[in-house]
Length: 208
Image (cartoon, rainbow, N blue to C red; front, top):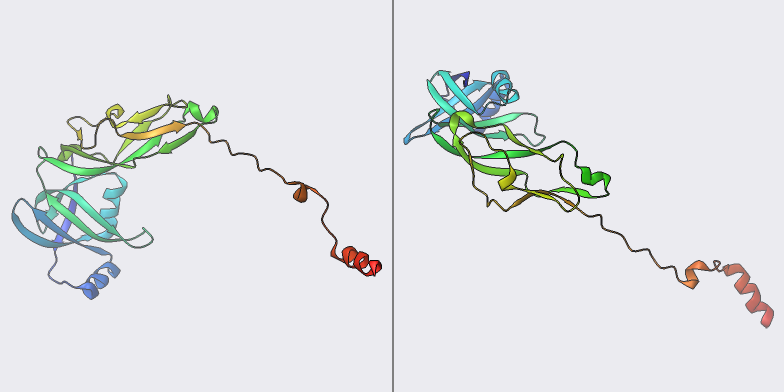
């Protein structure tokens, strides 16, 4: 079930007024999609951040509009601590949507104890799935990953009704053999005793 989020129609626009809105504890937002008119909204920052903490992507907007919507895009400040703007897309729970979902590694690869290096090559995956089933992220278990092994898109466990947009053979994570660094060769000059400049000058003066 989607979480309910209270929104209000936003009449004022512009960067200065948006900054004033954020200082008052609200976030500017827009609602678009389904060929309908784009609506400017405002939503309480604490309420929206609570929805994000719960991992919700689908919400039921109430108040200024009544509409099921997908959180399509969240714009953060430079430090990633404050939400600056939100894009909502009109959807129905059964409608299929295309989204980018983060891939998170879970577990410990046995290959690490064999001296291998775990490399995550794909950090996000595009999927098509029902709007009501958009996951916060997709977990990638690496508990069976040994040196020389890899996990591809085809190996991922996707949510029910979801389809990956990336090629099935694309590698998500691999455990590669450690790269042995060649030992540096030490020349005889480097291995010898350092030359003492003062002694050299005394020898030269003695020869005269």
